Amino acid sequence: MKTLFLSLLTVAFMMSFNSNQDASNNDSSINIEAVEAPMGSSFKLLNDTGSKIRIHTGSGVVTLNNRSSTSISCNNGRKIYTSPNGNKGDFIFEVDDSMCGKTIKLSKYL
Figure 1 (cartoon, rainbow, N blue to C red):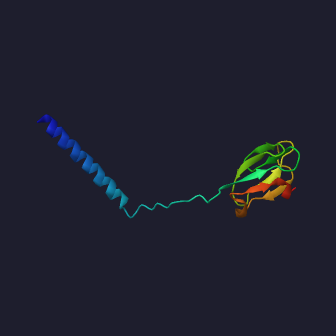
Figure 2 (cartoon, rainbow, N blue to C red):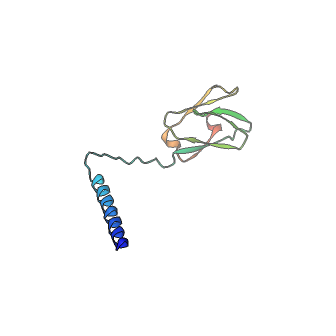
Figure 3 (cartoon, one colour):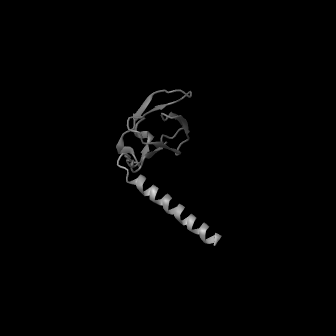
């Protein structure tokens, strides 16, 4: 008898929890918007210049040996610079949406 009572109490508790959850999903005052990441939210920068180079990606400094690459997030308007001594050097290019998901050759901009 005790087991039956505890089982019924557990079922009643579980049902009340589920009904509260459904009610909160139907609340019209809650506004949830889905945010989708754009396809190719980064691009690959390939050093095809024939020499080692340091670049400032907007979030840090990366050393690229010849034929090596790095992945850079595709934030439209981000500016990429050389970084010969660890600080921003000469401007190389500005990131735009057309670069997302692609491999960009550094020699095109130097």
